[in-house]
Image (cartoon, rainbow, N blue to C red; front, side, top):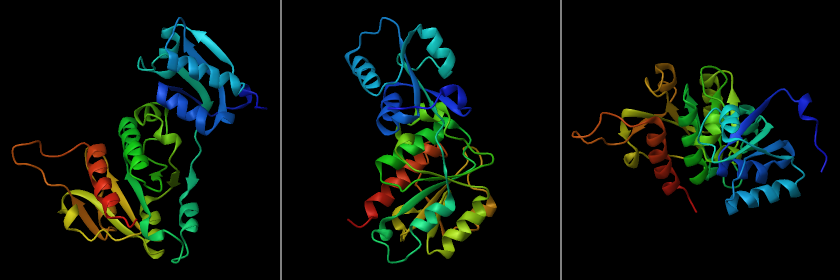
Length: 259
């Protein structure tokens, strides 16, 4: 397999963690420049990763754990790291073009998750993992004040960000308006919203998740067809983490989809 000289690639990222490394090798081996393995690691699963990398002609190097921690920015690399080309994102117009025709097969099952200024890479990763498991068609992120598919997000998603499509819009509000014109329903996650299981949850849809501290911006909430929420016990905490709330709402959406 031929591969580009990594020195010519500026936008590269170190990805650590067993699942993230494996998904990267499985899904886009042509983008992987090298694999680092902690020295003296005799884990059978890691040995299989090494064999896979060598079959793909990915250079394998053995390094101290401290070196893996340095390049990945964490001690939770599980003795593995790959240097790979940074994940690309698609324009949101590409998503709308795909589902432009109202008669498109399975359009009635489509749901996308949009992130309104989610800035914590761990939240992005966790939302991506739930979205991948529950069948979302992708994630829509803004190119401003939002987390990107960084190494931290990749670790948190346990490889899910390698499996789900990422779409980007320079202006989330304009993107949601375009989606509404194309026949998509827009639902915003909000603590005071109608209980999700009492909502119609029409398809195709976009579920919008607000930022960790402030929730949905007012301008975003005003664009939603309905705000949906989750009941919170009076004896419990006042709100859920953004990624946890997103997972619960996505489960309800997945449960409603036609089979």
